[in-house]
Amino acid sequence: MRRIDSRDDERGSEIEYEHADVSVLVVGAGAAGARTAIELAERGVDDVLVLGKRGHGDAHTTWARGGINGALGTHDPEDDWTIHAADTLNEGHFLNDPAKVEAVTRQMSDRLRELDDWGMAYSRTEDGRIDQRFFGAQSFRRTAFAGDHTGESMLSALVDRAQALEVPYRENVMVTKLLSDDDRVRGAVGFDMDTGEYVVFNAGVVVLAAGGYAAIYDRHTSRDDENNADGPALAFDAGAELMDVEFVQFHPTGMAVDETDPDWAPWSGRLVTEAVRGEGGRLFNADGERFMERYSPKQMELDARDVVARAIAQEVAEGRGTENGGVYLDISHRSREFIREKLPRMYERFDDLGVDMAAEPVEVAPTAHYGMGGVAVDDDGETSVDGLFAIGETMAGVHGANRLGGNSLAETVAFGKITGEEVAKRVAGPGTIPESVLEDVAIPHVHELEAMAGRDGEHDVRSVFEDVQSLMWEHAGILRDEETLEAGLDELATVRARAADMDVGPIASESFELAIDVGFMLTAAEAVLRAALHRTESRGAHYRTDHPDTDPDQQHNIQYRKVDVGTMAPSTHPVDKPSPAVQRALDDGHELDYHQLE
Image 1 (cartoon, rainbow, N blue to C red):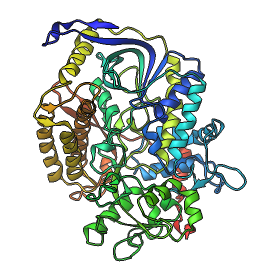
Image 2: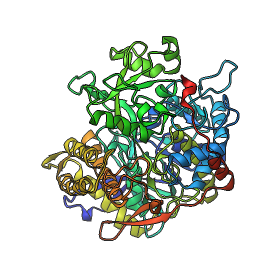
Image 3: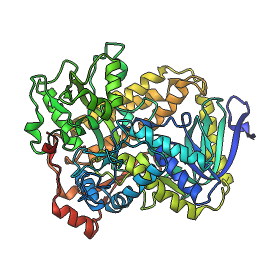
Image 4: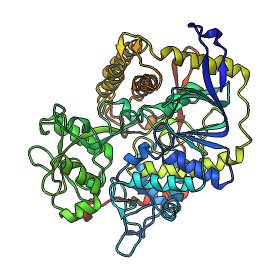
């Protein structure tokens, strides 16, 4: 244990902190962080530490239900990685980075088989092969799955593999700031969520695998204490740039519930996996119409997520919604045995709530699910800050304007391997935190945390947290316009002022953690509002009612960087072209034929 000089502490008390030296610090213990650590261990790098904000194996990856993409060709042998890439670019409305898309899709058949070797409990065909199902906007059945608990089964396999390799891991640690100088990351500051002790990590390389920012909305599919923008906000504060953050995917099928009912209210917005539609589930409005025939007669319920989400929103807006503000999702035409085999978690969830999916529909409505944007990175996952990498949902570039269902889990293991390979080449020990960074960044930040702990402020932390979420749903939701977005920025300034005067509990309390989250969420909320205002067109998940058409001149990525005055400065960057092989797949015009499911 080392001590911080207390000369800057207004209360005059000494503040202790733990000091840890590691060559590679991996922040985030979900699939992306685990796969990176596995790659490093397999390449002989043992001076690694993986940090988890929760208990070991309890990561947001477990909430991914429907599947993971890879062109295995189990049912459709004509599928290949180039068609997977073409579908990804089409779904992303050609704002994806083609090199990153190809880096993921080219290796996914190998990654799926690798997970199989590591014990992932895939669902199987009758002859024992990895089964694959249809997912929205995909030309072929390429979504491998484990019932409807794919993320849980995948993370279990990754954790088992990491433990077999004796990857060092530390749970219940929250990182609150990255340490960087003008151009290089030096480590991180955080606190032990059990003991309340502060920790300063000296690291030669930092890999951010800390999730995305979808939970800055009040209807979302994440746990409230996950996906609050930790990763993007930490990177932005350290000097990295954010990209594509205006593109927030609103999943068509979150649970629509009576929020006055205490049994149902906790489930509001929670994901009803796309696998329900992938296995033949149908959408009906309150009038009993299968309304997707009006919006997408060829692809129906399995059109792109943005298309289906806007269709549902339109049905509700025009008065054809259910009493809980949604529509009906019905798979009761399938047998009970089929549903229980293919969708066991969904069946059990609704059965526990008194709804029999095999006999009646469930109510669903759009809900914030995934941030396509995040931190701008190069082909290896490195940010503009030397030694700082960002992967998984923390990074941007793979998904463009809208994510193909099943590609999020694919991205985690694909870039986990890519980044692990690159970092292994760089490892040269922990390095040393320069005295200037320690004195000017680390120590003042720990003093800030100490001052915040136990602060007697005017505003309740949970209320401010929820104010950010409500603001974003109202001002930057499925449908956007200039007036609404500008009003959102004005309201955000008011919320930011309240956040500066919150009533915060002691360190290691829930309110202290939420207070840290509020800071991250404010950064992400401002970036989303500004980027959505900047993009004066509609493309993918970003829909401007005052600019409803796609503008070919805006086929570029918008990036934001932190400037000295504390504001965000935008820049635009052109999108590269795909490789000739992928362009041929695009030219071939492959497309899902939904009616194979009928």
